[in-house]
Length: 298
Image (cartoon, rainbow, N blue to C red):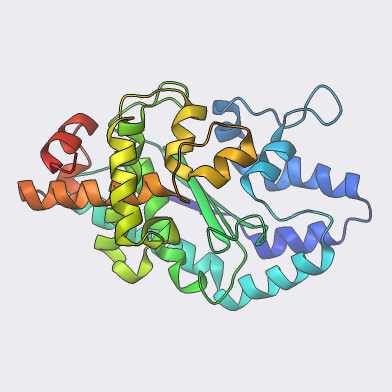
């Protein structure tokens, strides 16, 4: 399979040479986002809104936590940290390894190529995520946002494995933001995190898995137990991402800590594997209902 990785060092250095914010926005839209244009189209995000300040790729990037294009010093610092990480080489090597492991286990990403986009994150906006996050919901496309720091630089491969697993999962199961249930979503994320742990070790797990203590986790399981069949991305997001996220986006808080749905999903998948003796690779092709039922967590 063809692997394509953008060069964020070259892209951000060129962006920093743009003299005006408008020029930077144009470069971001039509050069930096061009490799992911099909992904954005699938998500119904236009490259440029028809009206000023309308919903488009710039608006979506701000919501997702991309670094602000006007923060020159922050961008320069981020570029140097990406350079120190040898980020492009690490991304290419990790993807090759992940593809080999998946293929050896009879799994495949149903796409002709994988395009990985690596971009700087707004570290403050993604503080609860420890400065990094990603998206892998469309086979053939992966996106990683990070502002390199002492907490996330060593876990880049773990995040990439998490997002790569979404590519695998959605090569076998269709899903839609509008129709996904809480139960389906916790399994999607739980599978991705257990996959990352299987490949790279528990130390590669992100704060969305490890952030809850035992009491909070048990409380979260109780809340989510009664919400497994709730549908709708806004409603489901409150259970997945927690009250702080829900409040920020104007959704209804449900009494959960940051990323509670992720932590519960991880526990569910781990319990399923223990109960059944299946591997994470075999579980990738199991239905969400089967995983939830046989986990015996609820």
